[in-house]
Length: 130
Image (tube, rainbow, N blue to C red; front, side):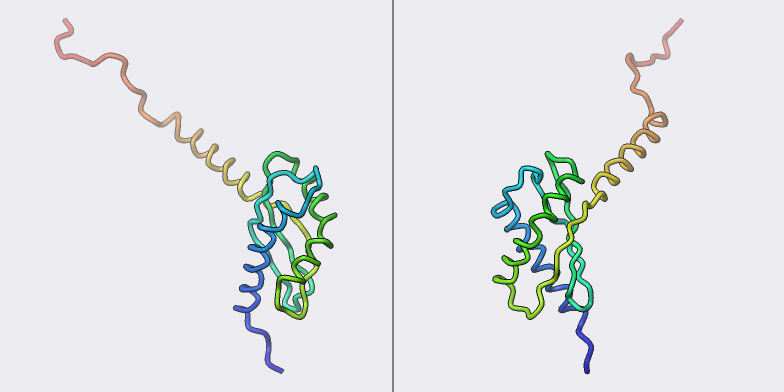
C-alpha cells in the first residue's frame, strides 16, 4: 500500500486551521474563551489526532484552553460537516506561547542595546569655549 503524501496532510491541517478560525468566534460561547487566534495545526499521520495551537487576548491561556477543549467535540462535529475527508481528527487545543516569547526576546534585546546607544547632546558643542 502506498503511503499518504505529506502534502495532503499539510493541506488538511491548513484547511482545519482556516475552518476553526471561522468557527470558534461564531460557535464557541464559553465565557472562558477570549479572543482566540488559531496559529497552527499539526495532524498525526493517521489523521486521528490534531494539535491546535492558539493565542488568546483577554483571557488566561490555561482557562481558554479548558474552554476550547470542552468545545472540541462540538467543533469536531462541525468540521466533519465541512471537510470532505473520511477521518476528522480529534482536536486538542494547546496555547502557543511563541508570541509572548518573541516579545520577551525583543524586550531583552532592546534593553541590552539601550545602554550602548549614543545619548543625544542637549546643546551643541562649540570650539570657541574659552
